[in-house]
Length: 196
Figure 1 (cartoon, rainbow, N blue to C red):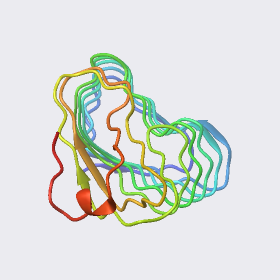
Figure 2 (figure 1 turned 30 degrees about the vertical axis):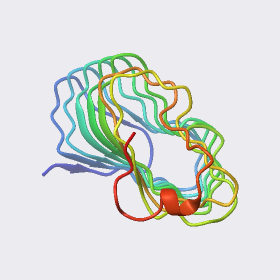
Figure 3 (figure 1 turned 180 degrees about the horizontal axis):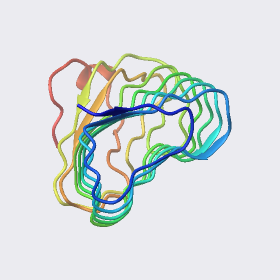
Figure 4 (figure 1 turned 45 degrees about the vertical axis):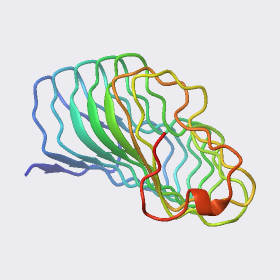
């Protein structure tokens, strides 16, 4: 297991296999936290972030296969949390969010296959990809999606806090993944999968 630690920018050369990356960040302002060049296979990325303001947290170039991304976020304000370019296969994304305000949580371009999305959310306000209104408990949502193109990733009605989202996705191009209709909280609460 190779573990790299750096307080600022990290660049990996071409064809450098890395099993794990852990990049703690202080209170500095960083424009690009991590850049992986082509043909650099990475098994796991763990990027804890402090109170810094970051313009681009993670950028993966073409043909950089990533098995897992774990990006815990604190109280920082982030403009673009994660951007995956074309042909960057990702097996899973786990993005826990604290009390931060995030403008764009996740953007997946064309031909970026993603198997699953797990987005546990606290009391944060999120403008894109996930919008949580005020209160009424949903413990877990599991929404398998086919190869369809969907308009909105997630819209929750008023009074519906969500603890966890697990969204397995196929190889489709998705503009937005999930829209919840006007159901009562009992329709979607609990750990049982919800499937359309």
